[in-house]
Image (cartoon, rainbow, N blue to C red; front, top):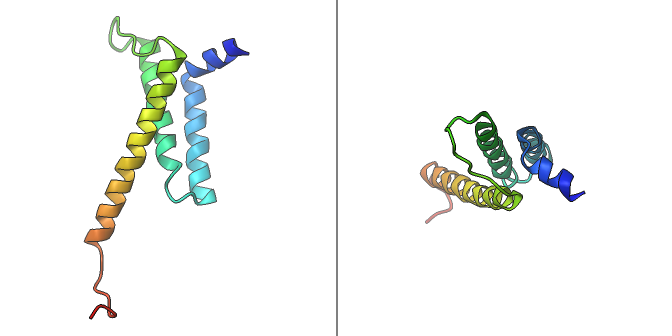
Length: 103
């Protein structure tokens, strides 16, 4: 079982499927843009793993253990969530209309 998990962690197609499922879940289940950034992080991990397999940069290995893949996914998810929240809150502040009840 552990061998399959490790194999799946290094498969870019698994991360693409996970990203698609998370984005669909966010759109259709209405998680208020919380799961969307984790889906984006899954796409980024898929791109990095694909680049590592295709050796886009010769001799560079970013992920050698499954721990590194999972920690990178967690960090990217948190950064994506914070970044999206920051952008959305900033947009809301700029587009605030005057409230007629504000005296």
